[in-house]
Image (tube, rainbow, N blue to C red; front, side, top):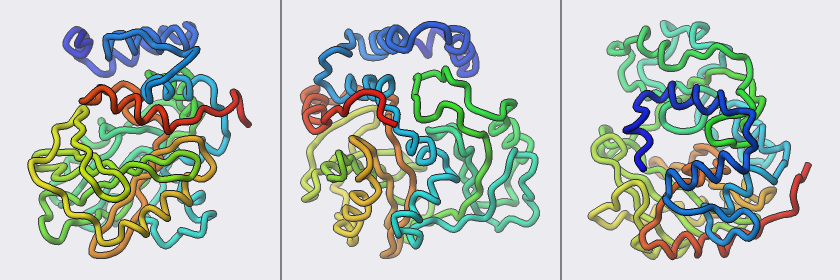
Length: 302
């Protein structure tokens, strides 16, 4: 079922989910899993990666996660790991979009909400002179001081986050500026990096390839088509893997997103629930392979 065709407006979809806030997480997640993936969700004995992510949402309560999903707070977490040198330059942290001093910002930057995941909460500004600030303010405005505890995907780590805005340096692909920089998303389990997903050409025909840590192409597809070319192994791959393992050592599972630009590694974000756990891999067995690596912890840590 393509629910987005039935309810086309994103705000309407979230309003409906908010009204269903009284429904227990397990019921909502089972319903969403069935609608989005067309199969039942096994929470008692999860085997698939996508199933274990749903279990993770409900049962794993590590308070450090709150800091790590906050786009401003995570900077302190990265610094606490002795990795402050990989942080992208910060131009400012603001309470609301209306507090951002656009006139004093450089000509290019990235602006995003501190409390949301996904591309809908991020705006890339390559040329400030062409920016429609009115449209931007509409897109990144919010009315609450904290994130509602019954968000769309029931993702516990985001519950209660203070809302805010951060503005950071825009990293540029010097070889092909219009394509955007490659985004290396490293799947880590208990501090061990296992797989690397690489997003390329994000602004000119987004593609995605899956690799193991030896940079063997696994020929997996997901919600984004695979690249028709082999993606070159990043020159700092071993350093990136070490960084990812350092940042992930406190958690049973987390995806560590990094960039490598002109020979320097930069931090992107930490993601505990990629795709919110609703993604179809091809071949389907990869879902089980990822699930084997994911050793679920005891419930209600923290």
